[in-house]
Image (cartoon, rainbow, N blue to C red; front, side, top):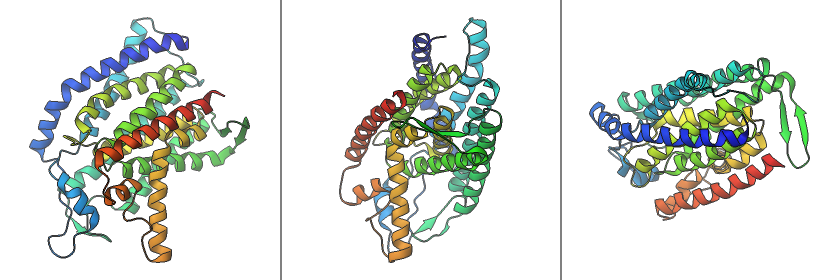
Length: 352
């Protein structure tokens, strides 16, 4: 199957996934309300209210769990596509020799991180709040969640290295490949965990992370189609279609949010896609806003640890703009525009 033949298949799947998700999302939002899967107020009842809570507790009561629907729809259709493709005589081919290992990476990354996020969401919805460094804290402990993410990332890295033979990092422009050997496994885990948490902290404004994700996945979809990677092309097309339907209800003022189920699943799969396509540098550029978000958080932490004061009014960076008085839709729209420019740059790097 040529890249030109992949295009109509991908576009058809975008529309199909969009229609399926669009037909399910309103009833699903109603279910989230009935189950009380809604955002809770985190501001303390007494004493000084942290700036974060002042800016965000107005979102309390909004359903949080849209990611549950997206992960379910995408995974289900993706699983059904291969028997259907064989029945229709569509030739499935991969950029890698071991197509089963590639499918394992896609499924395992998306589902395992989604389940971890679901556990975190459940604790947030129904768990007991406890005092944190800045206001109240609810959800899984950061250290526990990081350890689980790292273990999952190491499993994925092992499959990439041992079964798919991926052990290099390609540097565009200078056209060089750096072989990491066995160290590719922890490197891959670091990439996946970093993008998981970068995406998660970006998911703080209505439509911000999901809009940027559509841009990133559509860009990598064109790369996958050009590489004649049918499984990855199919998965990305289904993801983009489902996210289109979700984004309609997620833009300001949001009627539903991703929650950690979607945030961890999509953040991890974005990192894995960069590894599968061999475009780590492209991933950093295409997902540049996510990188900026996590770097700004790291700078803020360093400020508190070293200088004993914050560097930004609030972190990550989108919260800093919000604290300075920027309107939420303005921040999101400008981030999308920056994301499009970075995607074009990253796509150019992937094609030279």
